Length: 85
Image (cartoon, rainbow, N blue to C red):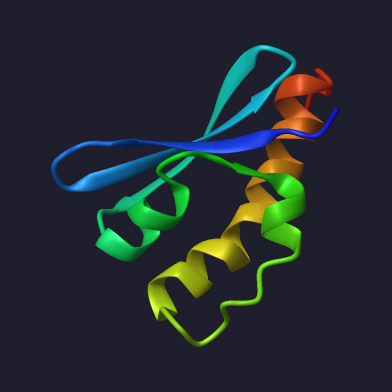
């Protein structure tokens, strides 16, 4: 089963999480921007993120989308699978 990316909003930051198999794993934190919050406020499946075609529309969202795959890979490798570095 593929995971879902969800975001928790604070007044000035967004916390990104991967939800997979009923568990929630912290990915990263970044400053709040309305465009990124609007895109992720209801959560997004990984498949949706891989098919993302909004490049150039919102530079901050573009940079967030570029960061996500590497953080998800890291969490899967070292936190979910239990591989010790």
